[in-house]
Length: 121
Image (cartoon, rainbow, N blue to C red; front, side):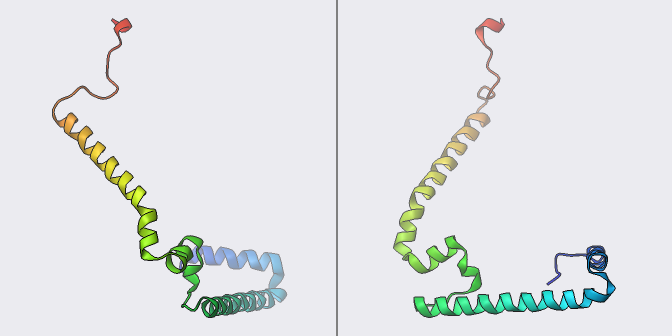
Protein backbone atom coordinates (compact mmCIF):
# COMPACT_ATOMS: atom_id res chain seq x y z
CA UNK A 1 0.00 0.00 0.00
CA UNK A 2 2.84 2.40 0.82
CA UNK A 3 5.18 1.07 -1.86
CA UNK A 4 5.82 4.52 -3.37
CA UNK A 5 6.55 6.28 -0.06
CA UNK A 6 9.93 6.31 1.65
CA UNK A 7 10.46 6.46 5.40
CA UNK A 8 10.71 10.23 5.64
CA UNK A 9 7.45 10.69 3.75
CA UNK A 10 5.68 8.29 6.11
CA UNK A 11 7.07 10.17 9.12
CA UNK A 12 5.95 13.49 7.59
CA UNK A 13 2.45 12.10 6.96
CA UNK A 14 2.29 10.81 10.52
CA UNK A 15 3.31 14.18 11.94
CA UNK A 16 0.86 15.98 9.67
CA UNK A 17 -1.94 13.68 10.84
CA UNK A 18 -0.89 14.25 14.44
CA UNK A 19 -1.05 18.03 13.99
CA UNK A 20 -4.38 17.95 12.15
CA UNK A 21 -6.27 15.41 14.27
CA UNK A 22 -4.37 15.53 17.52
CA UNK A 23 -3.11 12.55 19.54
CA UNK A 24 -6.58 11.66 20.82
CA UNK A 25 -8.41 11.52 17.48
CA UNK A 26 -5.61 10.24 15.21
CA UNK A 27 -6.17 6.49 15.88
CA UNK A 28 -9.90 6.87 15.15
CA UNK A 29 -9.16 8.85 11.96
CA UNK A 30 -6.76 6.12 10.77
CA UNK A 31 -9.33 3.42 11.55
CA UNK A 32 -12.03 5.38 9.68
CA UNK A 33 -9.71 5.81 6.68
CA UNK A 34 -8.91 2.09 6.57
CA UNK A 35 -12.62 1.24 6.89
CA UNK A 36 -13.39 3.61 4.00
CA UNK A 37 -10.70 2.00 1.80
CA UNK A 38 -12.08 -1.46 2.55
CA UNK A 39 -15.58 -0.25 1.65
CA UNK A 40 -14.34 1.22 -1.65
CA UNK A 41 -12.53 -2.01 -2.52
CA UNK A 42 -15.64 -4.01 -1.70
CA UNK A 43 -17.80 -1.77 -3.91
CA UNK A 44 -15.29 -2.03 -6.77
CA UNK A 45 -15.19 -5.82 -6.43
CA UNK A 46 -18.99 -6.00 -6.43
CA UNK A 47 -19.26 -3.69 -9.44
CA UNK A 48 -16.79 -5.77 -11.46
CA UNK A 49 -18.63 -8.96 -10.48
CA UNK A 50 -21.97 -7.47 -11.57
CA UNK A 51 -20.45 -6.22 -14.83
CA UNK A 52 -18.91 -9.64 -15.48
CA UNK A 53 -22.29 -11.27 -14.96
CA UNK A 54 -24.02 -8.80 -17.29
CA UNK A 55 -21.45 -9.16 -20.08
CA UNK A 56 -21.04 -12.88 -19.69
CA UNK A 57 -17.26 -12.56 -19.55
CA UNK A 58 -14.74 -11.99 -16.77
CA UNK A 59 -13.98 -8.33 -16.12
CA UNK A 60 -11.11 -7.30 -13.86
CA UNK A 61 -10.67 -3.90 -12.25
CA UNK A 62 -7.79 -3.12 -14.66
CA UNK A 63 -10.17 -3.73 -17.57
CA UNK A 64 -12.37 -0.80 -16.58
CA UNK A 65 -10.08 1.65 -18.34
CA UNK A 66 -12.30 2.69 -21.29
CA UNK A 67 -9.69 1.91 -23.95
CA UNK A 68 -8.92 -1.51 -22.50
CA UNK A 69 -12.61 -2.27 -21.93
CA UNK A 70 -13.60 -1.48 -25.52
CA UNK A 71 -10.64 -3.34 -26.98
CA UNK A 72 -11.15 -6.43 -24.86
CA UNK A 73 -14.93 -6.76 -24.61
CA UNK A 74 -16.60 -4.90 -27.45
CA UNK A 75 -14.31 -5.29 -30.47
CA UNK A 76 -13.51 -8.47 -32.30
CA UNK A 77 -9.92 -9.15 -33.36
CA UNK A 78 -10.78 -8.22 -36.97
CA UNK A 79 -12.36 -4.91 -35.93
CA UNK A 80 -9.37 -4.04 -33.77
CA UNK A 81 -7.00 -4.85 -36.64
CA UNK A 82 -9.07 -2.67 -38.98
CA UNK A 83 -8.86 0.23 -36.52
CA UNK A 84 -5.10 -0.18 -36.09
CA UNK A 85 -4.30 -0.55 -39.82
CA UNK A 86 -4.19 3.21 -40.68
CA UNK A 87 -1.91 3.90 -37.73
CA UNK A 88 0.35 0.99 -38.63
CA UNK A 89 0.52 2.27 -42.22
CA UNK A 90 1.37 5.75 -40.95
CA UNK A 91 4.11 4.31 -38.74
CA UNK A 92 5.57 2.38 -41.68
CA UNK A 93 5.51 5.53 -43.84
CA UNK A 94 7.29 7.52 -41.14
CA UNK A 95 9.96 4.82 -40.76
CA UNK A 96 10.50 4.87 -44.53
CA UNK A 97 10.82 8.67 -44.58
CA UNK A 98 13.27 8.56 -41.66
CA UNK A 99 15.30 5.94 -43.46
CA UNK A 100 15.38 8.03 -46.66
CA UNK A 101 16.47 11.14 -44.76
CA UNK A 102 19.21 9.19 -42.98
CA UNK A 103 20.39 7.78 -46.30
CA UNK A 104 20.60 11.30 -47.76
CA UNK A 105 22.61 12.42 -44.74
CA UNK A 106 25.00 9.49 -45.15
CA UNK A 107 25.53 10.42 -48.82
CA UNK A 108 26.79 13.88 -47.85
CA UNK A 109 23.77 15.93 -48.82
CA UNK A 110 23.43 19.50 -47.60
CA UNK A 111 22.70 19.83 -43.88
CA UNK A 112 19.08 20.50 -43.16
CA UNK A 113 18.41 24.13 -42.24
CA UNK A 114 21.85 25.33 -43.42
CA UNK A 115 20.90 26.64 -46.86
CA UNK A 116 22.22 30.09 -47.70
CA UNK A 117 19.75 32.62 -48.87
CA UNK A 118 20.68 34.64 -51.95
CA UNK A 119 20.26 38.00 -50.18
CA UNK A 120 22.76 36.98 -47.45
CA UNK A 121 25.56 37.19 -49.97
